[in-house]
Length: 98
Image 1 (cartoon, one colour):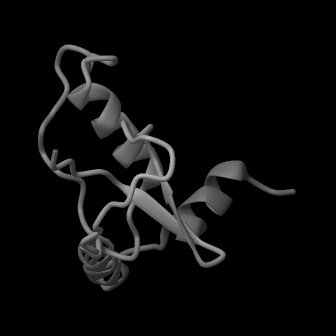
Image 2: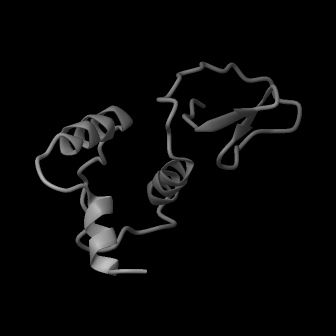
């Protein structure tokens, strides 16, 4: 039986993020496929629950992937070069005098 599972490596041990259907002392072969370093564990858990039919996503849920860390940084850099006041200046003005 072949099965793909997500696991977390901590303190020298691989810890599966979902239960495994294995017998006690059963030998298995493991293939390591690295994920991006900024993987959101919550998203992985949600995907596992949806795949097993335990969770149903709300109607109107988008399948558009969120931006990667590199895309977020590039956007932040681009926005920082936009003309006008910074968001912090706008917030301070909006608060008024202390």
